[in-house]
Length: 580
Image 1: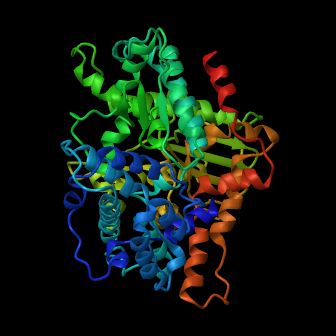
Image 2: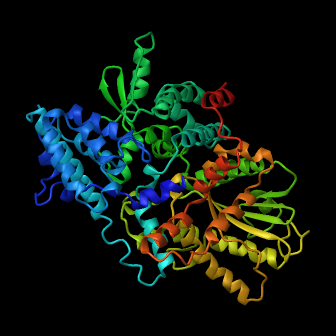
Image 3: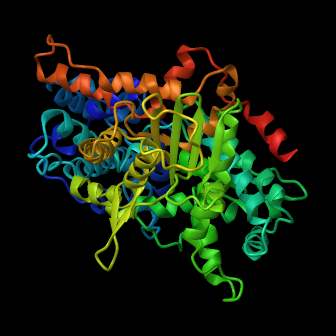
């Protein structure tokens, strides 16, 4: 995965202006008018199944040979000639998820009409339209770095990486199998949570009525086979779900229809919210095609939050949860997911307190979870947050810095007051420990303990290079204030940002006597590496920083691999374990 971070940063998308120098591009609508709708939608779905790393179509010549028919051989040859003239031709790639999703949603939203272009004409124009979307995507990045003059070289590279990757990284840097496993665990716990309280039972009942399922286990058993097709697809081509024409054919089709985008659906293009919500489209009666494997797998759990949010708004007022987001984050993300996973990855003898237990003990200002094993103290703050889709797509570091600051550092209220967020909450807990004022655990000498501040996130979109460095720039400023106040900060570690999904997925790895804080130590060593003096070229220096920018989740995968630890569970066995 280390390779994937730098490869995404370094690869260049093929733009229209490069493939067709001197030619004035038309609008996508002009290129696609009179084209064959089935061809476009099939192509977009196939492109979205391409591997982002080590694809068989990474070689531009192989891609052109696949895309164009023999009748367009000269057209393809001219394109390759223009690309071959480039100095960095080996890092050029055509396909990216942003463009493929954009192509799908754009063409799907157009009114259907009879094709008027010939097959050869449309092949050329479809390629040009695709590159036009590529150019749109790259132009959005043109000004990245212009607002970072006040940062040193290292910070500037980290923040450029963050700005380049955040809008698209969750769609390019992921392991589909890991996503599936963590989604299933979370869905299982979530449905248990919904049926456990009178407050959430009406929400669950309305959800099940919509899908005509007598229980949530029945719902998952109907959904999961559709998602397994997305996980198993290794052919870099589209996947069709064909419903068997048996006694339940109509019922099964109705179920998938509720997950399929309809021609009448308004297309919300900010972060592809429409195709996230409905990641299938209907090809013919009983035949449904996956638009994007990732979005299908995320329907297992991630899509539940948004769907239930909408259902909640439609419930009678006396059944409605007044603040759905807050209730979800506090009662489920923290008190269910966080409280479940920490004992699973630290099954050995240790001192542990949940945030709720600290509240019940009348201990104020404590972390969301406290753990001490010997001389190692882990402080967890759980942050399940969302950044608005229109802000996410901005490619603007100032916007990202402001948005991350609200949840991960310090938030200003509407009245201008400052409310502590993750970093400040961790600093408060650290101060208590160093002053021996943490009443929950006093049996330690503050100069002996190693303190590991940890921010738990709940979505792989935050597994991005540069976020660790941004958060720690705030953290180190606050740590310096503690030092100036005379506190012993020598054994306080940097903040580590950990996606809870990776812990869910690889929880079995910790049964081998491996501790999370030991892996954090190794990650910190990588972050602390000093640049060799032999690195004099700009490219060498950049590659060094790219390597250091690897998020913890990517580093953790490598650690599992290199130490031959227990892997993620078998998919079908996990279904049997959780659903019977």
